[in-house]
Image (cartoon, rainbow, N blue to C red; front, side, top):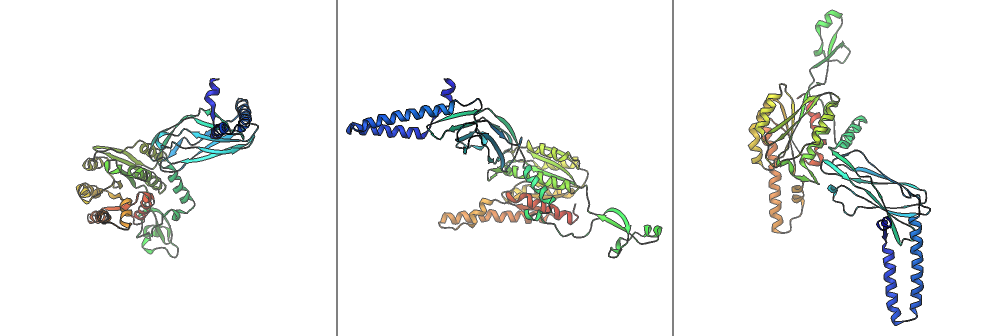
Length: 445
């Protein structure tokens, strides 16, 4: 009886019919002829209720098997698919309402899936979830509320399938870039090949001269030995050290579309590191938090991408301001080779940038430094809105001032020979890959 009590739920249809019956008996007080009609309806309703209970609770041991299928890892900031496989073992069609106990991070209190399933039919119910922060997500049980065609009561069947899923940096975005690269469709994502300026000086091999080869590449020693014109062949320089330097200070705590700037930087670092490894360069990682600097040495080994992924998974923002002087000292002691440093940070005012300029100049003295910071898309929306009141005008002027300061920061960095990339969080990966391809084509790294 306890199991029956816990599994039994009355539907809105039953309560509606009971309410109508109550109204009928109230009317029967004034019109006695309605009283026997009400008794007949009560008897019929009771009979239908018993039949409904009999159909729902006298099925076999597994009248409605259900399983949840999903990946062991979720991709942060992307739509992740969850599949519910169900089968109706009842002898009649059922209407099922599935309540999946989702992790609290999603804050979805009214999430449910409905379906009509015929007898003996198997069905797959799919839905997607978009996490916006990394970490562990705990899924609970799956509750199925089953109704027969009579629809007076419903039976709850609980599937104890709780499990924990880890949300990692956006590996789905990583796979998409790999797929487009493999199919030579990177232009559709915004990534474009840059025109080669100059030539690479990394020697590959010596070959015989053919018409059209650059005569400046003639190798006279090899020509004298072979008795025919021989030329040097060069290829794009490889095995350069590429480091993503991620600032984890309070400036990266700012949210856009539910995700912090740190998460955007982490997702982009994973994509960028993969592209660098595919290009034959060595990818590494540096994280900066207050006075703590952690370094993952650059490498071109196959396991390097997994190391970067595992390192990025554990990163969190802090409310303190990062110490750039500590960053300069640490990198100076760790790196003995000129490298490309991609610094992910954010400056909301020109004065904030000017405080860090001396340290950025010291970094750019020994390395090729690319400073990546972000446009405030919310301010851009304000500048595009139509001003109606005086308050709106003030807001637009202030927003335009901040937007202008962002462009000033780009010019300020350029004055000291420091490369910069000002982009929106959503377009970060595409713009960063384009910038990297441009630097490679110019043989700056």
